[in-house]
Length: 253
DNA sequence: GTTCTAGAAC
DNA sequence: GTTCTAGAAC
Image 1 (cartoon, chains in turn cyan, blue, brown):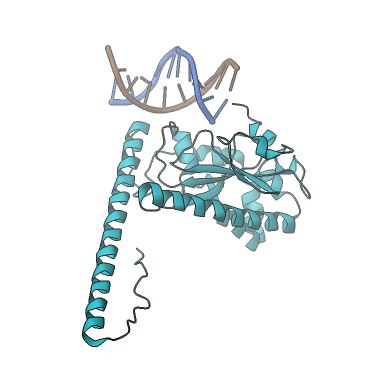
Image 2: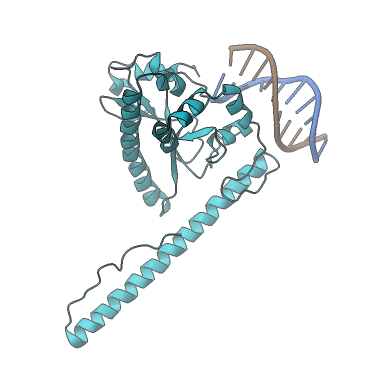
């Protein structure tokens, strides 16, 4: 695996020549590719194409990009946020059709990337994947550890000058140290002895979530069945028009 | 980024 | 003895 393969994708004159196993979607400004080593059931990378006002060097990584014109960078990140939403929607549709429910999807950058060319991770929060093998893999996606920089968090840096400059300059070594932190489940906080134990635990967490979500849907289905049955009865008995507005929203946890 | 593998941990 | 981690090589 070349460390510059993402850049070569982003520089392609005609990205549609990329094989369908690599390219998920594209427009004039970006490509979305399948991560070659997915760390969750769903894992994509959004790559900006090299174009004005940024050079390939500007787009080398998030750090280099953040040194460019502030307004341009902010507008670009906001555009990526919109582009990522489309991918998230596609993933959610696939989650529902394949698994019968949907779960969180994280959108963000690695504070210290290991490949050239800035890439936005779009990864499902299960973190259940054969390719997730090492502590650094896991810690690099742990949503609360600090190495994974959520896009919304990066955008928030633009709200405050001091925070922006602090975070943008933060030492690589401080971030890299986070990858060596002890293993802890991002969901329940339980500490995990080693990678095989953590992976088994993550699978259990995901299975539990699936069970809960399916039970929730079953309750909703039965409720709606009951509603529709009682409406039918009302109509038969009194011929009242049904007024069921607001009955189909889902309870949030 | 992965693969390989020595030696630490169990 | 086997499992697991982590550093070097690529």
